[in-house]
Image 1: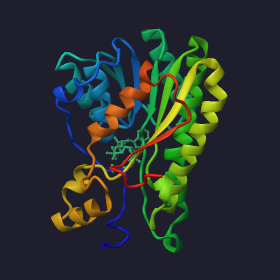
Image 2: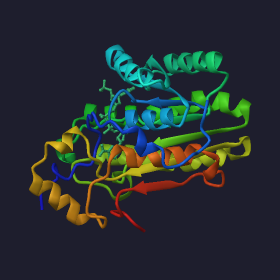
Image 3: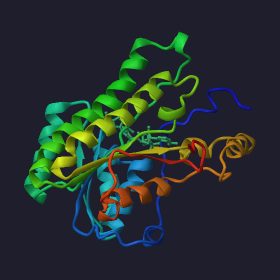
Length: 274
Ligand code: NAP
């Protein structure tokens, strides 16, 4: 079995592009919905944006760097999809509030927020620096709090909306070397339940997805034997793809999940079944 570092299940850059036909398997009636996805310039966030775009939604890509936001938006609009971009840091409350207000003024409202932006700063606990702890909690947990609070104001008035928090199986089972990440994602799962209870009477649902071991650029560079050892621990015997996460987002944003709130759906090939 590989050491703790190899067992890291975390955020990683990815250029995975979903083929359009991968997303044409279901019609969720998401046409013209406005969907905001944080950290969506690449990786799982971009796959989620692409999935909604294929369904006919207008997607707003929020991420840190202007170049990568523009590139991600362009790759969608070039194919005829409806997309726009905002440069924003989820930890900056005032800036995020202004971004959501501007989206609402242009689009008339926000139907779905996906809190996807997340980072890792792995280290064994005894070696973990205070900055590594603080940064991961600030982006993964406080960033989701900030965006949820700012967007809820608008959804509450509309008396409808779906908020999806991208957690991790590490927030459920923990992982050596990832105490900061596990705490942030475990906190996000608890946050999801509290918001779901608070927002339910206003017609706003809040759910989380806990991805397992997802194929990204980072995992693509792992030696075959390491990947095989991961796969052995997963009942479905393979890693997941960003599209696997994106498809569950479509369901959680749609009316097909209208009786579902406060839940965490593990999309992990059965790794954490309980
Ligand atoms: P990724 O490829 O690293 O992408 C994360 C994106 O978030 C990047 O574009 C990053 O921008 C952006 N970002 C970082 N800090 C931000 C901030 N403060 N404000 C706005 N955007 C910010 O990650 P991923 O692998 O796609 O993971 C996406 C989510 O899934 C994360 O929450 C992660 O924890 C979760 N997850 C991933 C896996 C996996 O196997 N990949 C497994 C479980 C859970 P920069 O590039 O400029 O830093």
